[in-house]
Length: 167
Image (cartoon, rainbow, N blue to C red; front, side, top):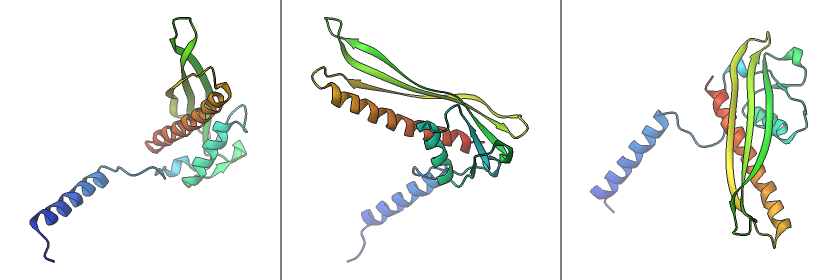
């Protein structure tokens, strides 16, 4: 079967699009190219077992960063300034009952070198998510809320990695 002009032009266009995408440094989710300056990082946080700290440690290690448990061994200090989830009611029924909730997950951090010099000024990353409240299914909605918070945490971790990758 002989290739037609349409088939050839289709593959040439596809190749051009892929070349342009890779030329602008776009890549699928996964590893972030972190500078060597970020290696040997210590995560300074009030609660080392908090889900965000554990997630941060895990994503850093998956991206080839050595996370140390002793601050004296660190070349870089990741200073977790705040980690909070807020909830508000954006929509009420005529009777004043909540119909919808909005979750906001906000994370604030800075980056210092071993001498305390600022590498990255305090940064705030946040994500919002809305969900509908069903008074007849409260337990399922609580489970949904916890799942949304976990997904929002993953989104924040990716945003943090992008910020670190930009250094």
